[in-house]
Length: 121
Image (tube, rainbow, N blue to C red; front, side, top):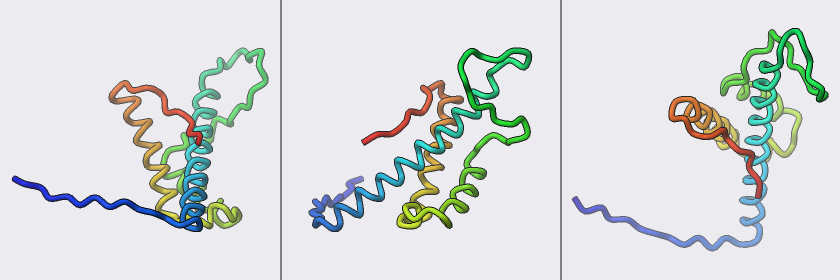
């Protein structure tokens, strides 16, 4: 079977470049914030009950559920109401970032891949 594909080269102007860069910046910050939230939750569950570490650390209360996709998407909806940067990006794009992070954690556990990393420019 023959598959015909077309390839186009996009040449955005300066305004479009700035919009794309702003969208990527917000997506990167949502990924990093959600990953930090999950890492902090996991780290707070590793400390022993009868001892504390020598480092100063933030302990998340025991009744706080694991920050999965659904919990983080609800928090993202609340944050969009107050944060102007989050309002500037389409909601589905930010939800897809959280889905990708959730899939990265699932792959880490099932396929024995490495821990998801923070994103930088």
